[in-house]
Image (cartoon, rainbow, N blue to C red; front, top):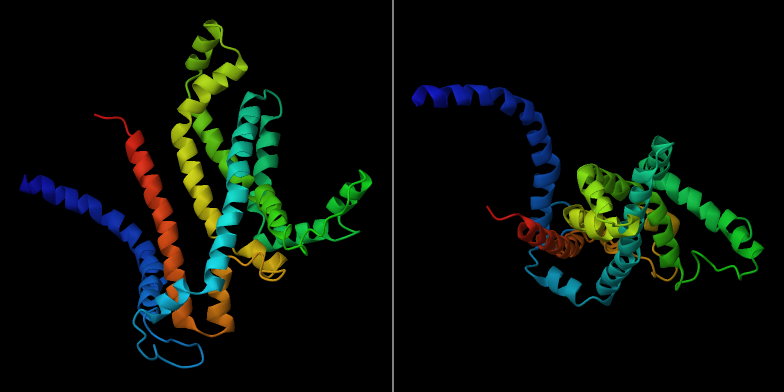
Length: 297
């Protein structure tokens, strides 16, 4: 037994050496800054002075929880998540089903749906800013051509968030699309053949066979999409800078503004920690859901 354990330890050493660079970088750039940010949230840390500053206790957290701007930014983030999550799940599933059933040019449809996802956020923002440009943009001209009134896509506080949601759906649909393709590939074709022999049509096969067997994939897609939507920052910051009148300022942009514009790093760390708790709660819900779906041994 001692010899066997020694051999196992020797076999595991190469794996540790391969993991060591990643672990060092992970501690330096993820774990370390996270711990320092948590510590900083209890101090009046400022970017214009050195050190942590005066001890603040829980006053930064109390100020964030009583700030109307913080709750407004959090609501904007939740509203953006509500606008983007359902279409990004439903459309990804629909397009994955269509691409899976296509016999010719399947590679083209897979490439076409996934290609926007690899574009940098700044490129996507510039493309859609041009499309939303009044009287000049492609989308504005299309709306005017069919006789509808041209909305102020990014300048109207009631419509700016919807415009950002449309951009995000076009941009990030490919990731969920690939996840659903992977889930469809794991479904045995014998099940569809058996249901067809029993008289089930294509819609019945999707509703009674495909969708139930994709339940684990759907739960994964839901939680990943919710977390991704909650962490929105890039497209909002580039396209609207949080405007008009802070109507599209997300929680992360609020943290950025108070940290790098107001130079209140300690307060920004506290607001960031509160937002992290929200994202962590969503992850915990997903963990509970997946545990319940595990088959009992």
